[in-house]
Length: 75
Image (cartoon, rainbow, N blue to C red; front, side):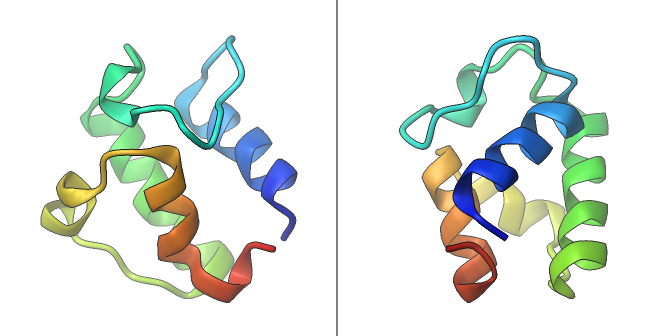
C-alpha cells in the first residue's frame, strides 16, 4: 500500500473531513476516540495481519508512528 492510500484509508476510518498529514499529531484529531481506535486496530489486523493492543496504540502519537507500525506494508 502506498502512503497516500494509507492516509486516505485513515481519513475514512476516522470519518475525518480534513486530510491527514504524516506530521499530524493524532491526539489533536477530534475524531480520535475509542471507536476509531478499535476500527484502526481491525484495519491493521485485516489489511496487514498486525494485531495491536489498545496500550500499544496509546503509545503512538503521530500519523508517522502509524505508518511506521505498518512497516514494509506501506511504501
